[in-house]
Length: 99
Image (cartoon, rainbow, N blue to C red; front, side, top):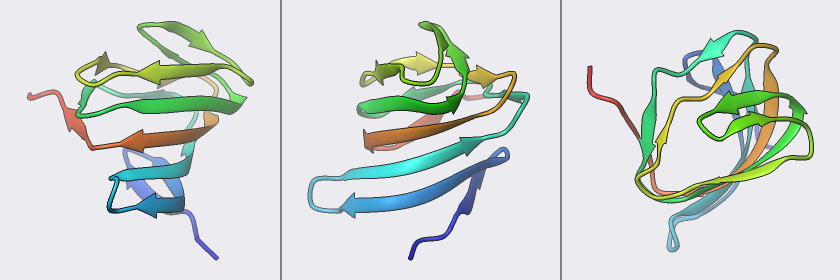
C-alpha cells in the first residue's frame, strides 16, 4: 500500500502508479489551505481532476468535478484559498521559475 509523502511547499502526494517506460504517472495531491505556487512550467503535459476543495490558476477557478489540462511549456501559478485534493495524470517534470 502506498503512503502519502511530502512533495514540496506543504503539498502531499500519494503515488498511485508509474510507467517508467512511457514516463507517465498518476497521483493524488493534497494541497494545503492558503497554498500559493510562485510558478512553474510544465516540461510535458498534466491532466488534473479536482476531487475536493478548489484551486485557481491562469485558467480560472477549478471546483470539484472540474477537469483541466496543462500543456507542455505552460506557465502555471496555482493557488488554493481553501485547500484541495486533486487526481493528476502527468508526464515529465515541472520546472520552477528561476528566481
